[in-house]
Image (cartoon, rainbow, N blue to C red; front, top):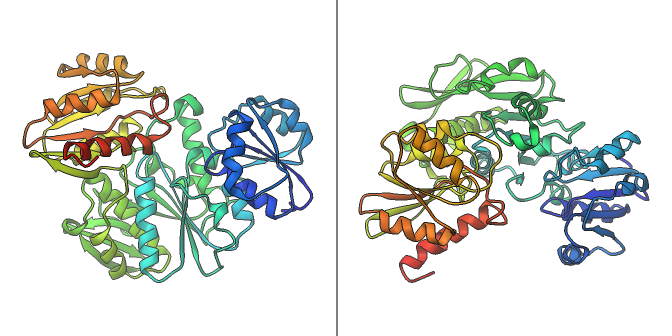
Length: 454
């Protein structure tokens, strides 16, 4: 891709936008950085990027910018229906995202992971397995570290392990991972994708350019992904915690087993996998299968599965205070993720739920309570919607709080020794917090405060 002396329009100055600007600058592009944030805010974000002469346009997305560039790099959080992007495409300007740009600038193979839930855990787990195997590994993407930041550091014999969101996949063109997995698909981001079919199509773009030399990994136990075999030209392998398979990854005699090219090996006894819950067994199966496809030995995979402690903000054990355990599942930003968190708990649950409304329904979430959740404290814009759904199914142990801190205080009063307090909102954090990480960190600081160490 020719970049030197070309005019690049970067839309979005967030996690991937700033590293993209830095890389384009190093390659000699003439850059305009556009964001709805003010120009002053953007300048502060650029301060550490060590770039000069960048044109900054803040406050809105002026359509005329599309006429003044040669190509566009759009951040995942920017809806593609924006008039500025539609105008750029109308004018024949290429519109791509950061992972597409990074792909074009590297020869390092990529293992890409997408799905509605489990992406971050599976990405972190596969990253640890690949590192343990002795291979230089770069864990990037939606997990927090932009792939573009590492393209100069990665060699051809190394590996990128990439968490890819549907928003990121919407802007690929040539991107082709050596191994790609769709972990599961349940309704999410309907405010952006509008229909489930559109959302599925976005996820399937991870397979778009794969050939028969590449591996396409799918979940046999998920209603949607079990039917996606015809969406790829790659070699399809399934994983399942419920069925025994001829090839792929599955559970047999309570062991996690991988089978590929006529060879079957036991990786680990399921009871020895450290991270709890059926959803984490699925994540472990997916990561094990991807690693096995990349040539990692079964015993190496098993060692990591036994030691891996999970990721921050995903069913994360925080502490036990006065006989009550506290779990931070702030990454539970949709109902399916929070369902898995509820199912992973072994104690009666006092639950904090609610937040930004992404257009989903909460029926399946409430149905999961089934004696597991004893009290629920609601916050945010979805509080009314969740309460109405809960009462419709006969769950009435509902409390409301005006602030997150008030919700936490109420939970500490409601919980008794032997209970757990679970933050798993089933909603995005926007409107109350900058992101789910901030929400989770505040929760953990409040737990520390119970011991007087916050």
